[in-house]
Image 1: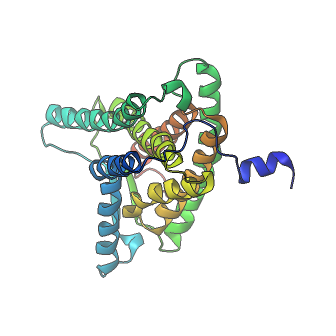
Image 2: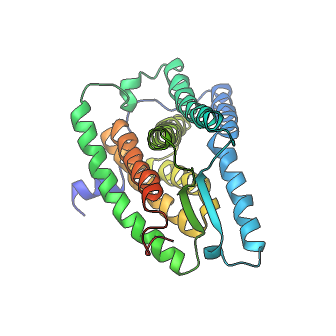
Amino acid sequence: MSGTLRSWLVPARPPEPPSVVDPAERRAIVIELLVVFTVTLGLSAVQSLLSLIDALLRPEPLAAQNAAINVSRADLGMLDLLQQLTNVLRLCAWGALGALLLWRGGMALWRIGLDRSRPWRDAAGGAGLAALIGVPGLAFYLTAHSLGLSLTVQPSTLDEAWWRAPVLVLSAFGNSFAEEVLVVAYLITRLRQLGWSENRSLWFAAVLRGGYHLYQGFGGFLGNVVMGLVYGRVWQRTNRLWPLVVGHALIDVVAFVGYAALRGRVGWLP
């Protein structure tokens, strides 16, 4: 095995942050992780599991059931807009919470790749990641749906309004920022402090990512585990988080806005 391939498959643990050996500090990290993910994506994973169990218990096959992502939250248009923006703000706050806790713990944000030192390279890297995951991901979803392993995912069921496209773009950014900061940078950093290996941390984070997509069915779970493995490894090797945020956001923008534009107009889209 070449040195380059080995460094990607079995990467060495970086020297920063150091492992925490004090039992009280280790307990504090575990408690912090439990609290953070209980109020954010960890609880979403539990709710997604319950949603999948409910779908499996229904008489209809999974492919005949719908899983909507961006849905209307109020009958009055302006109230719906404010509800959508509030949800985006919540997602951004979740990501900011993870970044804040790392920063307050002595981890400079540039160490996790949240600085502005190379915006164009980060944007180009994000576009590459979006292409790497997005196109195969769509093919995988269509295949899983045809095999009855996924619900019919509806990225947006919002009615036509002047604000629909901008809100969907903001929602894409909110999702990507929350997920990549919390499930990649924050979680893997904390697991490093607990002495976990790079591969063990990577798999844990990827399975968690798949877990809160279980509401989409088994296809959504497996597809997002693969995405988590790729994105997590890229971050472990490059220490740049913005390409992950950009790549994830681009995938969601295409899914959200594209679905809203094509729904009912093309036959190949479930």
